[in-house]
Length: 492
Image 1 (tube, rainbow, N blue to C red):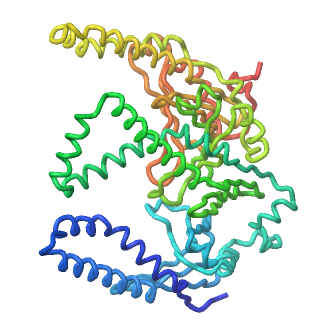
Image 2: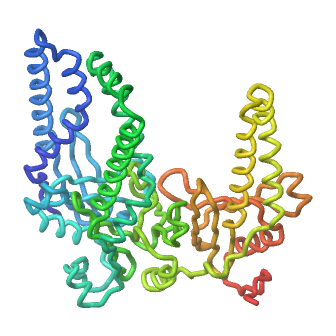
Image 3: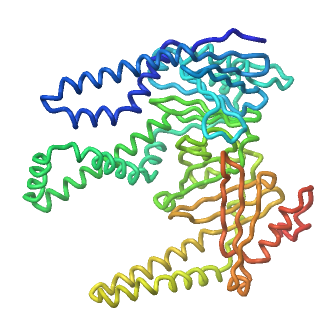
């Protein structure tokens, strides 16, 4: 089958223009503030209009010079305004074909298509920004490798999933609200506000800043506290709304050899995750979610786009209770074993070793405080207490479990607890690191590595008893099938 070269939908021109305006928005703002005074105002407007016209022309040329076609077993793309580029993607290397729709797409019955292969490219292999929905579905069918069975056009149809009673989970808006509230996005939004203010501050008239500063100084403490609370509340609410918009209408369906996810209110995305690309399954609980025994389920994926916000981690359920994880894994990912209840803590010697190491490192700052700032001696107590508390929490939340074909790791990075399920055939490397003191204490550190997009993902456990490491090492070395008794890990 060879199709004629096709253009994207003409609305792609508008999407290219909007993207160009987004990329140049800071330049527009800079021109306006720098030359927005009355004597330069007309020239500023002319300059901005000229840039918009140039962006429009280049967007039209980009659309005109972009074509795609399907040639038997490959997708061929030709693009480039001045320098013509050709790219051919074999359907046998395609790992997933994802659809995404923003508001404009949905209003016009269009969709965007992203094609990802098994390579380690830093970007999506092909992005068709606007196609008719029927053309996108046909393209996805044409690029699917036949497995000898009857292909179904409705294989990604939601109604079909209901009729066939395929394993499926949906996230309610109540869950999404809690997810946004406890996501920790507050710091990110606050940082964004500070960055924007720092960039715009130079263009704000000094007289306005002086008046604002004088007004703040004259206000009572109570008024300033109320204003601070209002600002923080607005920042928090923006983070919550952003999470709900991003993950709204979240649905995950298990097909034969893939997971299919739809999510998003503003931009509706349809993600396909082949099981063969999953390198690890994990649960993340930050310090806000730990007391409520809830967390986010994610998978680590090999290949695909590195530059996306989620990186190689893809959330497969935004918020799940700890008591629901076992049934979710059995229903959606039966290839993995729920072993949370069998997790074994690391050696207590690690807690004493790490605490002593931290105290030795903190001797210098504590001494400086006691010598030069003796009135603040109490801060040293807070510092030591915080270090010991953190090490104790890390010790209590670091655990491991080994099964026939799966290694489970639990650790405590950056005030959050992560639990990872690793299949033996997905682990790319297993390393050991041991200091002289650890050797005397008969404990060690291990690092496991799995494949992701570009540089791999690494997970470390500190303070593992040396006998447990030896069992894990033997388990990993034996590539052929064997029983747990072969490495002394019988369930009793």
